[in-house]
Image (cartoon, rainbow, N blue to C red; front, side):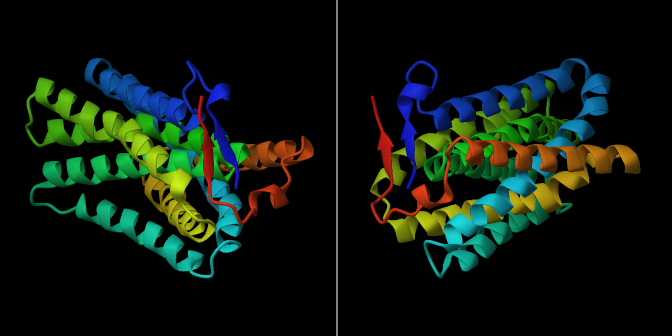
Length: 261
């Protein structure tokens, strides 16, 4: 398995934790933007969502073979990851208690996002960076959506702001920290199952959830931005492999290890 080398992070932090903090920052920016400039935030939200959708879709396809190669049960784990996010998404649509349902669903989703950072960087740097980029981009839309739902339900602005910051932002690094504490002790089989679960979750976000955020984005703009994100991820993968990130180096039978300073 790959290693998470703390030395390549910022302030000596593992890259996964840096990525999760950046994601939380992006969600916070979205929340503050929509609370102060709602028209501007709403205008650009579909572009963020479309770009992130393409990136996450390609990233999920990239890491699924990695997971399947380590466990015969990984396809079931991928389905479980997809279905978990599907349930959260449908739960948030229920008319009764929609504000609470949205908060619960997005907070759980954001926590899973944070967990995915640790798993993706443990698989390989390229999977980590690609997945992190897509997830970070979609955090903007996630923060905006949660704040707007809370405000639409009549929640006071200050409370909606604080709830959105916790539900869409702070839960992400919390999930990453939890994963970093557990991943070093996982066997190849366990890691592959966890990676398959993360891939399934990414697949749902990229292929099902985020496309719903395209809103009034026109056909050409949505397709072009979506395709650009997917192609960008593919080009980055190819570039990484050309610089020595061979697929075989991630199939060691040793447990996952995270290099610590």
